[in-house]
Every structure is written in structure tokens, then in C-alpha cells.
Length: 281
Image (tube, rainbow, N blue to C red; front, side):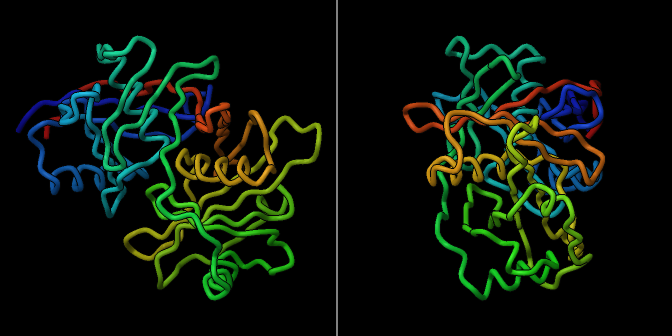
């Protein structure tokens, strides 16, 4: 048994308990894949991460990211939560003002902004239209008519997202998906708020767990990154905008998206540690 530093970090909210939590083991060196997966299942959070000595000389630290049933090459709120825990534990970036995280998707840059930490969205590994058969499957799972779907796109940066653009934020909030699915689903939905609203876009994220139960992720950085890429490249958004997520699961996620002149999409939000201590693993 080894005593390891442990943080639970709240991500994408200025409140302490209304964002998306991630469990972070700061001293992850020496743990096996099986031990990491077992710990993640024990936390029963959507993700847990494990900080390791980097293998890339350009990286400040390496992270492995686990859901309840699998390891992922990249995820958004675990990236910000991991960086927060690393910095809070005394990490000093090699490049002042810019942290470089090594993960399965490669190097991810993270910087401080007025809205908290922000990561540079990694490139999409699947960027193509959703075929009709898949779109029918997604609409059935969401229990929504095709007349409410404006557009759809595979926008996968690691977790496997297919994104549906709906006609309004209210349609997004009104969704009542099926409780279970025999096939794996990773569906993001996005809809516009009316002009003059506090937020420009409303998002929800649905995924099947290892038992086939369709769950809703409270606030999802990877999905927001993928959606922002789609919205910016199609001209539906420009410059910067605020997205909200989590209302239906009693969360208040606020995600800040920015499109730099060089094409980089930055995904940011507030982070704070709620629990700090040690885990005997």
C-alpha cells in the first residue's frame, strides 16, 4: 500500500459544488492500469486522473484519464482539474504562463485566463457528417423528432462524440432520453439561446456506461471543444462565446470558448479543489 496525494477538483463553475468534479491522484507513478481503473470505479465519478512523470521532454507532467469502464486519450474537465491539482501541489511549468500536459492525445497546452484555466482544444480525430442510420439511432435514443435537428456531425477529439445541433436551447433542455441502450452512445446536443441571453449556447452530453445505462455528464470540456470547433468553422459562432451546461442535473456549468486568429480553440472555466488529502492505494 502506498499513500498518495489526492484532490477532488470542481471544474467549470465558480460555485464549489455545482460544476463537474474529477478525482486526481497527484502521485500516480507506480500504479498499474488495473489499479487506476479500480480506483476510478470506486470514486463513482465520471472520471479520475493520475499524474505521472512525463515521457515527452516538452511536457510538464503526464496524465492518464479513466472513466468508469475505460481509459480515454483526452477529456476536457479532467484536463483542467488535473492541471489545477498539479499547480496547487507545487508544479512549476517549464514555460512561464503555459503548462504542457502529456496525454494519450499528445501534448495539450493550458494557460491561465480571466475566466480560469483554459486548454487548447486538440485536433479532431473524426470530423465528418453523421450518416442517416446513425442519426436515426441517435434521435431514437434522445426521443426527438427529426424536425428539431438542424444539423449533425461526428466531432470526436477522443471520447467519440457525435453532435446534434437542435433548433433551440429549450429543445436541448426538454430532452428526455431513453434510460438504457444496447449499443454504446456518446451524443452531444447543442442549441442556441435567444439573442440577449446570458449564455449563447446550451449543451447536454449523454453516454452509456459499462452497464448500458444512458447517463448525462454534468459539464463536458471535450464536447464543448468539439462543438466550438464546429460552430467556429461553420460561421455559427465567431470570436468568443459563453456556453452553459448541467441545468437538468442541478449543475451550473459555465464554459468560456475562444477562437484565436491562428485557429486555436481555447476552452476555459473556473477550477477549485473541494477535497485535498491522501489516498492509501
